[in-house]
Image (cartoon, rainbow, N blue to C red; front, side, top):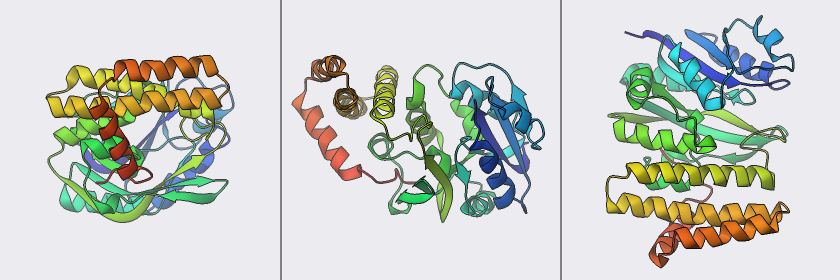
Length: 296
C-alpha cells in the first residue's frame, strides 16, 4: 500500500529562474504535512541541475521526449497515496494542504480545488470549479486546470501513463480517461494552484504562437479520442471540439504572421468537420464554457 504522504511530481527542463520559487512553494504550504518532491529533469543546461541537486528533492536525471514522459518518470517513483503535479514555473498555494486533508478524510479518487492564473504577479483569472461536476463537455471546452487536483495514485496506475505523442492535449486526454475511471470525486473550496503566465511558458505565454501550439495539440488529441470513442454522441462531441480547434489554430496562425498556414488550417477545419450540427454544437458549448473551470 502506498504511504500516507503527498507526492509532488514535477517535469522540468531549463526551469530557471522560476524553479526555486516553485520548490519553495511546496515546502512552505506543506511544511506541516508529510510529502515528497520528485523532479524529472530532461537535460537542463541553465543551472537547473546545480540547484536541484541541493534542493532536498528526489531528482531523476534522464533525457526525455517531452514533459509528459518526464511526468510519467516522476510518477513511477512516487511513494505517496496521492499525486500533485506542479509545473516548474508555477506555484502551489495554501489550499493544497486543505485538499490533502480532504483526500485523506474521504479517500476520493480525485480531489479538486480552485486555480488561478497570474501575469507579472497579478491574478488575471480564477477558476469556478465549485459550480458543478466535471463532464466530457466541460473538460473539452472549459479550462481543464489539471494541476489544481490531487489524484489517487491507484487511479493514475489504472489509467496508465500520460500519452507522449499528442503534445499539450495530453492534459485533457488524461482528465477524460480519469473521469471514466474515478469512482469518487470531491471538491474543496480552497485555491490550491497558481499558473504563471510569462513569455517562456509552453501554455501561458499569451502569444499567437503559443495559442497555435495549444490548438494544434488539441487537434492531435481529438484524433486519438476518435479512435477510442464509445458511441455516436461522444464522437459528435469530439468532432464539435475539433471543428473549433481547427478554426482557432487558423486564427492564431493568421495573427501570428502565417497567412498561408492559416488558410490551410481553416480549409482543413471545414473539410474534416463538414456537419453544420457539429459546428453549431461546438459554438454553443464554447459560449457556455468559455472562461470557466471544468468543474470537479
